[in-house]
Image 1 (cartoon, rainbow over the protein chains, first blue to last red):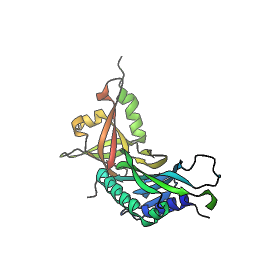
Image 2: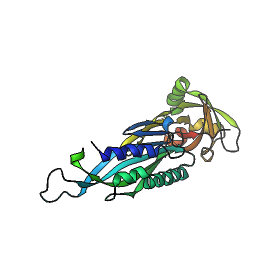
Image 3: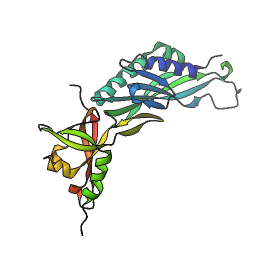
Image 4: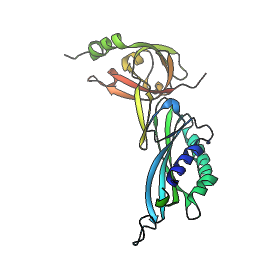
Length: 145
Length: 116
């Protein structure tokens, strides 16, 4: 059995945990308290098949899938702007260069940075959220699942 | 006949649930006032997740502030100590009253004070 999607998501949690000063890494947790910040939330993302889904070939044929997990960095800080910039830089470097992730996507696949979005507010300090988007193009082999 | 909303409405409420506070405007002296603690839960969105935290705040009576020499331009960045914590006024909203905003309440929106 081999489930590349799960392997990528699990590795993404591990990689997020190596970003300096991140206190908590959580997968699919949607309820975070401020004491856990700065936190990285890895949320299993959407997926589309981008190649191999045409014609009348066998149902178990290999496919290429684009998976876009949601990675949220949340933090309270007096310097929220520069903090989020640093988290973005450190996470992006690690994800794009990680040997395990690149190995999982294979020679037909890729990892690409697809952008980010931010939002801000106030709690006891200024609150900021940074959502990074990566697209993982990977070979999906239904017969191996 | 005009009503004294301060005496009839605000003062009894502050007498019951108000707490002693010290407000220090930037460059000013400590002023003893009474505030109502308005610290409340404050969830914020994080994409499809949510971060639960606390939003510190406090109500005060504008006439009490004015009578102590604290005018509106002294609200921002003032230190406000009550219930064992010291906060900084990061913003405020005037809540008004039937007798006008100068006779009403102000809600201070607070942030954590920097460590000494």
